[in-house]
Image (cartoon, rainbow, N blue to C red; front, side):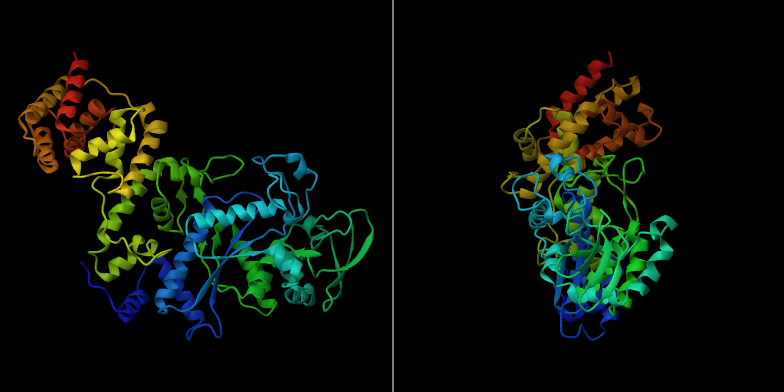
Length: 537
């Protein structure tokens, strides 16, 4: 096993690592070569509470945390904070489809989310409900963060100083924003969105700045009444790009990543935060998710994959592993990518402990084990792969049970029990769900051709004389030798393997047959062969 590195050696290795979290963390080292003066480096993620948390929420908090941990490694433990910021002062633009009492929301369209009754009847507002869901969601995965509410900051006056700066530089900010807008939009655009004192709606109207020091502005309410009121104390909020910049300025945000769809927002908000006297945070612009057809995922289309679906057919670790890889490349997000992600995660985890340090720091699992822990778990391995489990439950059928699977696992690993292998128990659960919903309905065994039948008889003959201690490797070698025998007429070994998969398992793809036979059992495999040969008559 690789020796434990000293802190100095680890820092030195991290400084030259090409792993993307370290590359991102290097930006912060350049930002603060001697450490951040008088405070913690602040990482931020944003959340729009007009809907429930989703897989995009998870990936942004996860990836930001990966950079945070990488920075802590590079600096030998410099203090950091992660803020999960909720944009709950936003006005509700449309009624979500997946909430009860839609008429309640319809009656409050346009109002700040924290000033709209909770349609679920559990919290003081719709935003408070969704914020609670966000915190429960992040706590479920053990993330370390501080929750910050936009409404709380606006209402308490914590943003008043920053709002005054926005009013002081109102014309300059307009100079940044107006060229980016359509001509029609320019006529009504204002960086400041006053809250109507009559209707409580967040207004999209032109405003006139009267006094930046007191926050006083003048505007026409929706009924035409001219109103003079302060922007302080929650009586107004800012347009999105200006709001983002103001938040960076007010909180002192040092790092925030976002999706490719916000590239222009990063540009404009970066200019505005400098106008306010702040500094644009470092950050990563990541690619967006695609569905299995390569199309952009849309909430309205419902062509994506929810985090609940991933955790039904896979595991939290496999999801984190999938999201770690190549954040600047678009990722397809559908059930079909899960099995490979599960097996690759465990392959990388099993390799980690024996790798030299430069390979360890490039191993996704090194980073993932440190998201919410101390790195424990390196070198762990499971007795079977997820793909092998899927093949096993496929043969057992849609009604397969966990007890059946564990009885077969006993053929492969001594004392295999859910208690001894809790991680494997999670894979058994996921394999049964995947088989029930996706595999079993599609499996169709075809009868073997004449030459395939002869090869199956040869395999059956070998299995008949194989002793009880025959190993998976010996079984695999026997399968190879039969496939290479010219008497059976296979042009390539791939043709033989495909024949095994299609006649015995009902699928065009499958596992190493030696491993499968060892897991499923020699007598049971002989029964599969007998059924296939019977079907050939």
